Image (cartoon, rainbow, N blue to C red; front, side, top):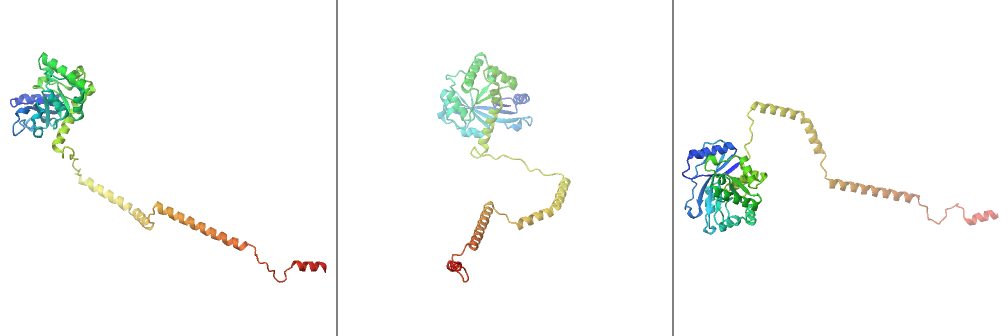
Length: 337
């Protein structure tokens, strides 16, 4: 499970932050993002990441700590230098405060993967399906923070529920990321409790599981590829090291067995090689041509033999009668005499 929004400030006590991270890890969240909020109107000239490195937290090896920045934006024409901000953090999210900034974040602004709204406020615009689905098709996800509904006053909870219903209805439950935004361990909830709460707000269980597992994982992977891959497209994946046999005795036994097999089959291989050398391989086309030529030659020889036999058996057309042969005149004279 993923929780991509744990607020961090320069005055946050380290003990409280460690307690929140350890509690979330015990609940089953293995990827946690520490969130630092900035304003687009007050960005420093040199952008640096003040969040401490993950190695400074005493956490288990199964838990991954990411560093995230949420940028408040009210006017997209002010050029908030999104590329420079995204290079300093692992994840970049935008928090638009006006309708113009919200539409720009949904349709045109690049270099970010999350739209995180302050759901405790009442927005002067409605969540329409067309811009929200356009953002989802671009690979942008909408973040819903449940701690805003559990730790605020009655008006804030009412606004959170109303805004969540509007976003779920406009997106039909697609492209959502559920985070806690828990400022302390008391505000964090287990994944099963979060799914039940979202079910009350109209989000199905399957979509809820996607919003806590598949969708935040896609955000983390895409943000990592943008920063490490060539032009954000091609990445080199480590395939692991080649396994080396440590037991040399097994390797020697295997080599001896292989030599014995080679010696046994040595004569057969030589015979097969000699047969293949004595009888060259003939293609199918060449064999067919040879058969046709042999058939044609046999037909020609049979036709020549038939002509020779007919010449020997034919009668002679010579009209001259040899001596001593009986003619019609001699036969008549003999009959009269």
